[in-house]
Image 1 (cartoon, chains in turn cyan, blue):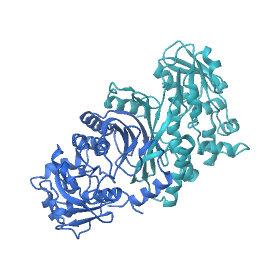
Image 2: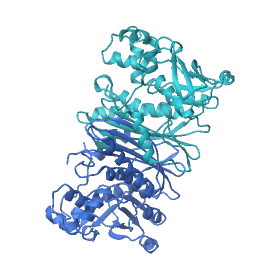
Image 3: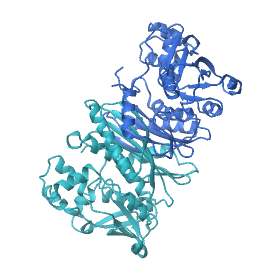
Image 4: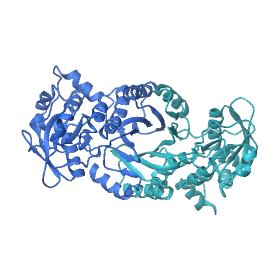
Length: 311
Length: 311
């Protein structure tokens, strides 16, 4: 059973959210009345990171940053977070403190103080972060309409390229340092999310690759989406890494996880009002819910990341 | 390093809560302005439960129930919860669905719907639950004053006795079934917490044993507390289990974790106003912060539960 099948089945068991909850399971975050947003993410050793390639301080940063990214994708500003630490064997006190220094650095950078938590032993280090925020104009995944444009902030593929470099699976070129940083220290697009909230029709963060995340958007909105692989904005160095592993740049960038850019749809008339640089990468068209791909790599395997499967 | 030392060091790294946060790390839950309460708890396989003695549905119930208990101890009513599932090897889909049926049963029983979550692989099944609530009259741990009485709801020692029975470490008497249920299906004292909130000076839930939890209360309030071990209300069958493992009943009941009763302090004049049955088990006295014990077992080892140590 895959990650998304399992989530659907568990969501069915948990039942529909009560009247006061505007959005339950299935968006970047839940939306509680009137304007409170809640999101939670797990970071598990050897699933989401490897000790050999991730410093403790980067790990702490990332554990909070991915939650801030979910808040950003709802158009929400952080209030606070709580953190559960399940401490695996072989982690020193100093390393654990370094993890929390990374959490603190991210908390300070995005105004998301950590106000509580829990600690336990565990066979593998696990960080369970839950973050809360408030939004005046929540942006969900279900607002895309035929005729809208599909766009993305920033550049794609950098985190996956950085991961391959860090694991020694490809050799580094000139852009290697920036790619590694991109994987280690993701930058939630908080200011961008807040700025785009009033303009876009749907928004989510690119955590599992544009291909996967566009599918979620299409499913939630009940629309067909076309993605132009040739239009994806690549981080410098990504094309070379993609070539080194025998993949086309567009397919690589569309399936590489953890870029944490924002994927949005918006009506063409509102594009001029978007105060954030965006790259147009496709469009919402009439048709059954789903995603089709155009350009070089459109026939490649474009399955996204699944945290229940082995790498 | 122990659990509580580590928490203090990590809390120092995370820093003081910002102005809008009324209570950060160190109480049952954090209190965000104006009345929002947040708590998080981890449940890790072979740390908090064993598969051999815990059914999936009971595990799900317990994972949410311990969070509801924290809300109750703040005098808060649940709004919602989110749940992170790190899925260890060897758990079938059916078992995972049973876990979520247990979560749902607890959610329905206490009005705490689960509105979001995350799933991942992991070497050991871990449930990370974060629950939110609202309170009109938050009750913290720092309000105990010399002259107050120390009291507890319900009866103690049952969960630890049930655990020993379930693990086959002692033989069951007539009370065995009730003790096992007590361990498997803890009952958060939500109605009691709401009813006591207007009356008591300090409150917390008994998760690690009265001895430990009274120490936390003494430390947070900066007071000395005397606990009468002979006064502890024992669940039927606890004395026999304590005797079977060579411990005095009072020490056993004071150190057995997971009873999830409420431990409170209150001024003698307000005792009559408490609309919930309470057992008086000690008092707050002048002196340096700390706990002293009286009665049979007062010289026993009264260290509490520590989730970072091996059993």
